[in-house]
Length: 338
Ligand code: ASP
Image (cartoon, rainbow, N blue to C red):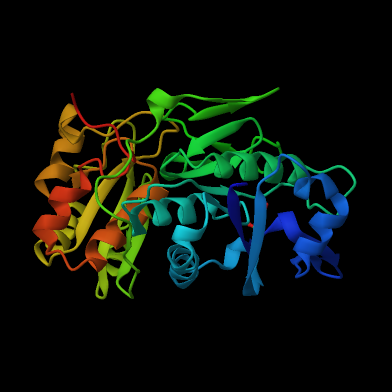
């Protein structure tokens, strides 16, 4: 029997049509795909079923409620398909991929996120190739993770960042090698994949807890930082310098971090650098952050750290347990110290 793939269409450039104010998401993508790529339903191809968001979005409008909707669409159909393709805008795809990687606990099938930089409706586009590659990879059924398939690479979803607003290789996973190279064929690096889960699949939806991000810069105001960490914030990703340093001689700012962590706000440090990892103890200017209660997030992206924080807080863990789990590798999102 042919494998089956479920394609979930949320919006994004891939299915957009031009309007007076610029490209907008448009329904009817399935029909446009059938017309443009008739061989997608031909011999040797998997059976494809489409399911659309009622209200398609430019992913700039994505919200955790959309992550919940995608996750629910997957779990409701989990046993029926070999794998899933999620068509999504590129602007916030790294956030959605990261969030889904945590929410879909015990995932044992491929969830392949893709989109395009040029819509399918344009004569020259990357939508066609990204879609076909994603469907073929999802149909294999043997990649038990949330991935981003874009251009020449299949990447671990919770390691991705949107790295290019112009080029067709829009995504990068700076601290994690590609899971597959896409060229004249698809070369999957089996040894880089996550192990198949031992527990059955379950879903943790996200709630209304508030998490935020803060980016350090020379001259950052302690008052503005205090406001940013005020109630109802429960977790924050702090984008630090280099290997994990900050303005340690600003006692007022360090006290702001210390008071926030004492109140139970979990603050996770990641690096502003494009690659590399945070080790707060490397410099005195980082140890001060650790003393103020900030935890090192190792080589997690901001997107992964933010969605992981929300996931852990929403699972009802106390701040001490969240702090402990944040530095642990849950879904391949960080490189643990060896
Ligand atoms: N603004 C679009 C979106 O994120 C960009 C894209 O899909 O490439 O939905």
